[in-house]
Length: 81
Image 1 (cartoon, rainbow, N blue to C red):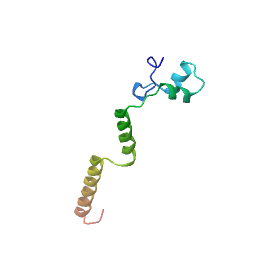
Image 2: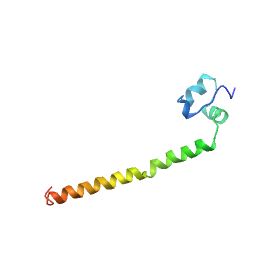
Image 3: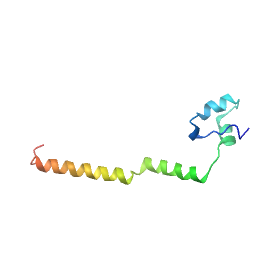
Image 4: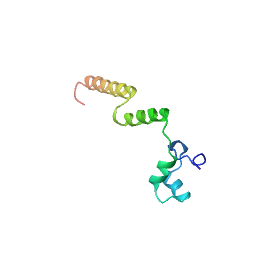
């Protein structure tokens, strides 16, 4: 049955629903039985989690650009704004 039921975030199907539909008593059993770890997905997951905590270079660059624009505007306002 493992070939027929792959509980995977990529499929977009909620694992809890799969677990209930196939009659398992617990979600833990379903996940232990039907989830598979691959090196590519492991790297993708690590990158996704890292992005939650570390801003990307483009985000950091955008933040620096926004700060620079604010400083220019403040200087143009003569510090009155």
